[in-house]
Image 1: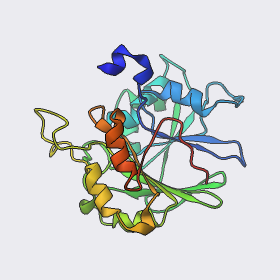
Image 2: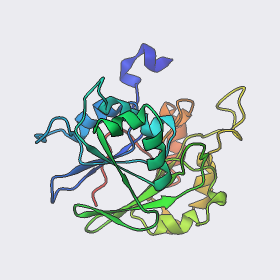
Image 3: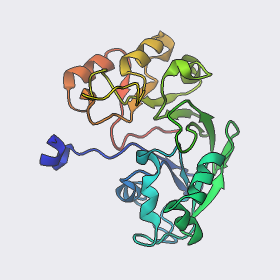
Image 4: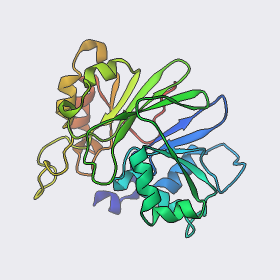
Length: 259
């Protein structure tokens, strides 16, 4: 409500841009409802060879509204994109091909769906990206995070997971393998969504994640992303300081992580 009254407080939906300086290619992880402005940010300073292909590829984590609904802006009623590559798991790819309105994007050549293996690296220029399966509410597709490896550093990106203990991996070990880890910070407190059970929309609370990643060797690696609009970390400086004092960070629009 405050952001509606004061546009300076508005936030865009979480996504991650990947820029390969060697090849000049640029990619997005997730197509959010803010896709148009996020493409503008991603392409700042770049002249497009084809204005109808404003990104060299979009990698999708799963079929929840904040992560793939922006594909609609590539369609006939908007950009009318020219075969933008969309990389997704086999189940996510099948969902896009078999269900409208997404199937129309495929049929009209606005997007080109490519299946991405889980657990095996895919080269994107000089970057290497590996999809990592995570447990989440998989009503329409499965869910993945991504490990992105550059020439000298790596990054772990997991915007959505039900609970860390439901994963077949240990989050401590996965973070230890990365130079930076952008992790699900959807909720800070159990009571953020009055009248609804967080059991229906499970996410690890920020405090739970901090407890798991409290080892000194992990300090400074974890960054919380994907904050729900009810999360006080978006506006409460004291709460933010309490997180930062423990060696964690809150992601902000425009943050950059050299790889």
